[in-house]
Image 1 (cartoon, helix red, strand yellow):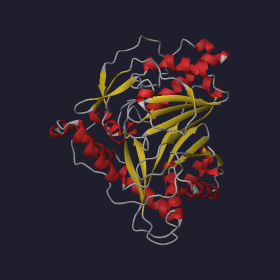
Image 2 (tube, one colour):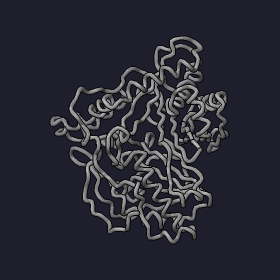
Image 3 (cartoon, helix red, strand yellow):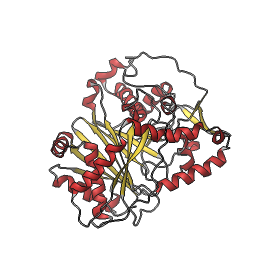
Image 4 (cartoon, one colour):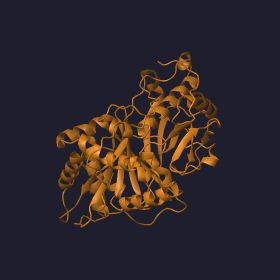
Length: 428
């Protein structure tokens, strides 16, 4: 267990390679904010949650920042405004974070009944960095409110909590043949949307052990299976089970820490694509599973992943591009992003299994994750597991939840019972 230390000073810091894109494309309608939540066994005491946040924030330099606009790039500097105010949740999840209304912080903490929500502008960190922060916030909160844990109030920061802030993209960059992103137009899910930027949320809770049993039967990983079920559901609902000239493309973020020895809490992932092109009407799920599994397998080797982020890093290191003023870079980056967005149907991210210390487990029921929608992606999904429970959360701006319903129906048909919970928007 690490002991408490004085706050470290951080004057300014560059954004990591991936983070440079997010400020350029972020807006009220495309927030690039993701949410991580922990559901406790008792209702949250707001004052104690705010106290816990004030205690831990000075430790997390990568969260304790504000973003500035430079001549050539955005950059971070230490935010000395104190912690953002903790509020009861009163709006849809994953809304745009307006820094001026949030003490210039790029994350927010809210609560609702037994749930603590951490919402992060992706410019700060990926899922690992977010889980780091949320887990330590939860630990500190529980130390403040649970009598049995108060003897641990002087303990701080678990050994498995990383404060590393290296730009791992630059550290592990090797100049090699670059691999750009897809530009072939993909199937898009469209339809009538909720008013006032409403976001429908649907959680599905299922047993990890039952899911593993099915995946062993099919000889695939959990991630590949759920990605294939998602693609197949889109094929059934959006394409009505008919062949298509355009593929269903599910973007899958890959945690590069599994391939490179970095513990950075900042962004360190790349996006690979699970592509399914139905060549016949009424194709069986087995064909979807085969195509999805094959396409992911081809991209998951270390060399292919290196080529993907080498493409991004080489642009950042290009001396000519570095000298281009930021306002011109914005136009170019938006164009590239909008063009690549046409090649994606949706995104499925897996935060993976969240582990907590034994003494805190009795007070924690589950963890959840959710994504904001983006250009061309009106429906997304996020996976998070804790203990034997896996939670998959769909977020959508579409009034029709047929794809989600088809997804859970397929799981049930495969012998995996699912308990479903929504934020009630589809019932209105």
